[in-house]
Image (cartoon, rainbow, N blue to C red; front, top):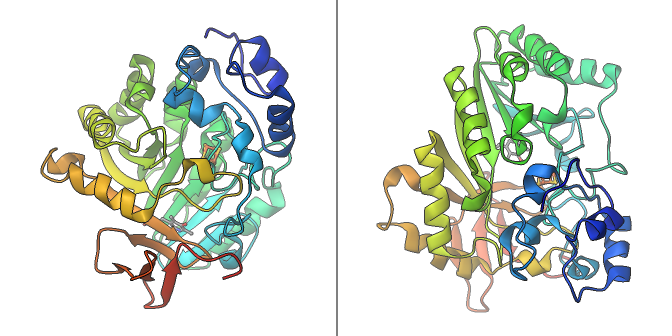
Length: 353
Ligand SMILES: *Cc1c(COP(=O)(O)O)cnc(C)c1O
Ligand code: SF4
C-alpha cells in the first residue's frame, strides 16, 4: 500500500484499504480510541492487504481481539513503575538505567508492552526540568555504567535534542555505554540521516543501537541502508525481537530473521517472550511452545545468529533467560522461575497473583 504520510486514525487506515475485509469497523474504532495507532509509509508499503495472515499487518493494524483483556494482563507488565526513582528513569539493575525521555513512537505496535504509557494519551515527553532531574540522577549514581534510551522510541526526537542528551551523558565520567532501543531504521529509515547519526555519537563513549524487528520482510533495502549508515559511523548494532503468535512463531522465520540481522552486521541479542500487556492474548504463546521453537534454532543456524530467549518477569523482577536452569516446568504446566536476586515466581501468574 502506498501512502504519502503516517496514518494515525482508523478512518485513515480504512481509506487507505488497510483494514481487512470482514472486520468490524465499530470494534476497530473502539480499539483506536483505547490504544494509539500509527503506520508510517514504509510500513504501509510492506503490508500485503490481500493476505489475511500478513505478519506485518498483524503487528500494526488494530484488531478487535485487543478488546479482550484477561485477568493476568497488567497495565505495567514488567513493573517499570516499581523501580522509577525519578520521572523518566527506571533503575532495576545496579549498573544500568533506562532513560525514557519520550513516550511517542513512529508506529504503534499492537502487542506493545508499554501500550498504556505510549501514544498521544500516554506519558508524553519529559519536561526540561524532568530531564535535568533524570540526568542529575545518573550523574549522582556512580554505579551506573550504561544508560539505555528507550520510551517510546527515542529516535523520534530531533537530532538537536538527541545530541543535547548525548552530550550531557558524555559529560558523566562513570557512564561508558549508551544504548538506544528503536524501531526507526525499519519503520522510518529516511530519518537516519547524517545529522541524526552524528547526534548519536558522544565523545569518549560507546553507542549501541538495538533495532526492534520481528519479521525478515521488515529488513528492506532502505532499512538495511539505514543500519549501514549507523554502523559505518562506528555505532554497534544489536537486535531485539518479540516472539509473536502469527508473526514469527516458527523456527524457519526466526532463522531467516536472525541471519538477515547478522548479514547486516547486527548481532542478535534478545528474543522476548511476549509480555502480559492488556488486550494482547492473541499474540501470546505458551512458554513451553516458545522453548520448543527456540530449541529448534540450535544447531540449525550459526552461533552468531542465536538470540537469547528472555522472559521479563511480571512485577519488575527482571529478565530471565528461558532456556536455563532458572526456568523449570511444574506438574500443572506452569513454570517455576527464579529471578536474578533468587526470588521464586510461578508463570504465567493466575489472575490476582
Ligand atoms: C530490559 C531492561 C534493562 C536492560 O537489560 P539488559 O539485560 O542489559 O538488556 C535494564 N533496565 C530495565 C529496567 C530493563 O527493563
Ligand atoms: S515501538 Fe516499542 S514502545 Fe513503541 S509501540 Fe512498538 S513496542 Fe511499544
